[in-house]
Image 1 (cartoon, rainbow over the protein chains, first blue to last red):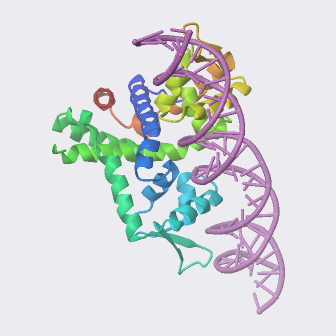
Image 2 (cartoon, protein in one colour):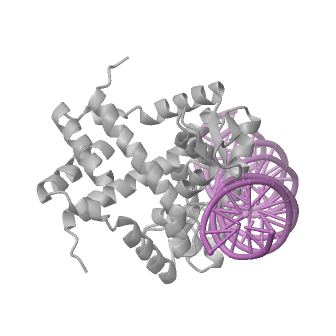
Image 3 (cartoon, chains in turn cyan, orange, yellow, brown):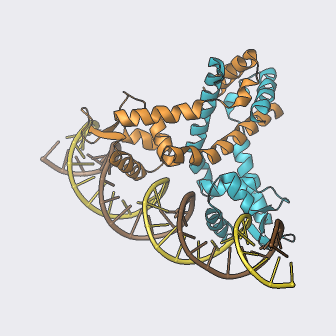
Length: 139
Length: 139
DNA sequence: TGTCAATTGTTGACATCATCAAGTATTGAG
DNA sequence: CTCAATACTTGATGATGTCAACAATTGACA
């Protein structure tokens, strides 16, 4: 068993703490956009102009395919998402954002990626360092 | 409106990416412990030997108090958590981990805070830098 | 070619999560 | 003592998530 350094554990622990904090904030943010946390997550995964098969969403979310069916049902009934048959494989349906969905997703991403004031306390050098380090850690 | 630097946005975006990745992993980890994601979150908030009022959990989770009632019902019926009347205020019930709950929580925390291999690719200097920076950003 | 297992998405049944409105018990201010 | 506010529970309802079963399609292979 490989030894894991104390510093690495500390760092990861902080990231986990960050995760739980965000997890508690998401319902609030979602409610502002009249979405649920799960819908936010799904919407986040569909990039505009990049249709994606439903199967792949289920894989990324690590959930049952039928769960995606339900989530997409609700998003589609609100006109945020479109189901389209895949040209290559007729079993597959690909998802696409409607213009409305695209706008809402932009709003969501914007809200989520607007950094908190605390990030401004770092020097530019530190900010760049953080980006460099996180990029490597998250691959 | 204050200008937010490009670097700060990049950094936060990476953290958000990390958040969604973890959000997708949590159900898998939770299932291994026979818990739900929400139960993991709640369990994570109850530190052993530090009884906590239910109200405070609802605040931290940013959810309705009745939701906590249900979550605690299930955890209590599994013998992981105890409801106790608060000595100071008889309206309040404080939550406490049972020995079983304490063990399960330790397992959970251990699984969650075991850093992925990618963190080991950083130099010790970088790991410490990451800890220092995150500490300041997350307060 | 014809058969059959595997894959994709859907449906229905069911437990959990989460909110809201209403209710009980208790507190604390006046 | 009265009454609003607080902490928790209950019941109703919709969303999330799993599982088993199903139809349609694909692809391998005899």
